Image (cartoon, rainbow, N blue to C red; front, side, top):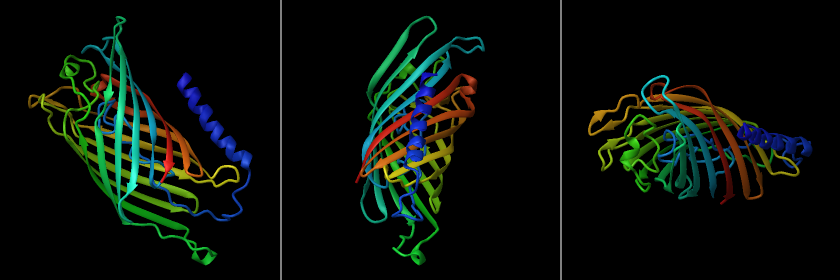
Length: 328
């Protein structure tokens, strides 16, 4: 409950700041921005390509370098029966992330997580793991770039859109412990998958005046690791709606809402399917981002709308993300 109260407070502060500034910046009588879509791409729970992270970019930043903190709350059955006790699981990720321009249409995104996870068993036992997570590198190419506006009214474009495709690789930097995959508890309680995984992404965004709508999808092709465990492939999709406010006291305030879904295929061990490891989850999300000059800060919350993970053996509770970036 404290986490929900904290997020509500942060969001309220963001909208209060907007109300306090009152009017739109008179230098921009009709704001016509175009901003990238911030989307989710989490390997289930904590061991994956983004370190249990929340996507490859932010709502407001084109190119940046920054820090991001992500907290995920889950619980999983410690047994195969409906009355088996629950294990409380807490996944924490501190992530260095950046998006760097290579050419006018090509950019490079890198994510390097440090993870510290904890779970609490019904009998009072606890388990903690910490260390570097898997590093992800992705290149994005812009197929359709939004047209830049001129200074005069007849040079303003109300509608703008962008289409970009991406491809990348996840490096097996994080430690993988096969013992954490044994038994009936959550097999994703890991720092890394131990495998080389390959990522494809497509993003489409459209802007109208100061409104923005983004649609995305990613597919992660996972391979078998050296311990002969193979996490199932993952498909991620999302929809995000945002509105940009330019004010006198704050350069930009961008509240947003959206949906994010994840579909997981079945894991394999020694080439054989592992029962009750597939599943799907759909999250609703809301948040805000505030920018002052080259500094931006954001917060977002994800709550499950519907889910069926590990045949009901795992339940997602919520995810909370905070970031602080410097715009390049």
